[in-house]
Length: 272
Image (cartoon, rainbow, N blue to C red; front, side, top):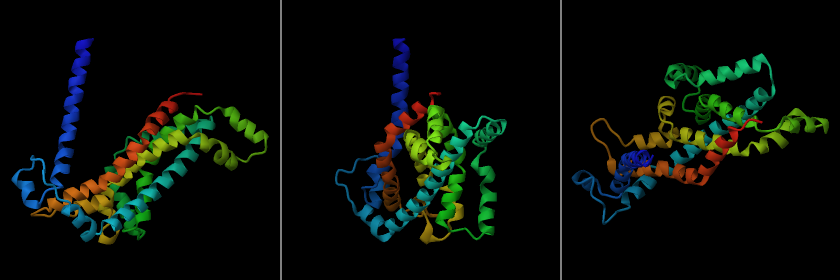
């Protein structure tokens, strides 16, 4: 048993180092001048410079791309939480063959790769004149994550006693009021989990925005970081700080909310 635990610990440490090395290289080289990055990329910057971050912040108009990302992510999150929570509540409380079939449909759709529906979605957006639209981007992003969110909500709602619904109806509460005033507040742990998991996806989304957002003024942060890569050369002195600035809000948000992920998933595993 001790030998097995030691082996697991060694493998865990090796994997942690494997994932940490690229992050380390990005961080240390973002504080170096352009020439020093290629001269010795592994060397620690004992005299770091913040000029790279200043240039990215001012010259590349970082705030604009940050706000674009916030808009598309907020639209996507709002749609996912509203639709998934309502659909999951109805599917969970309705014990019919149709509700089970619909839940099975949502579950199976999670197995469908996004690349299969990617081009038809882009063609529809082009036909409906919705390209270069941040709200449309958020809508499409949400449509790809609603099934998984329904799966999470559905498991959690089973831990909420049905007696609460019955008591509320006896007191004259409407179905809408029942969900908004009683059920949804009780779903706070899993809602936090859904928000965290989806914001990580929406914020870092690259492929769909690359196809949908062709105008510079509506590009998101991942496209902003990618813009420093050229066909024949790359501005690594700007790209590396852009990568850090793009991911930093997510890291802070995840550190604050990480406990809610475990709590929501754990409570969702308990059936009422």
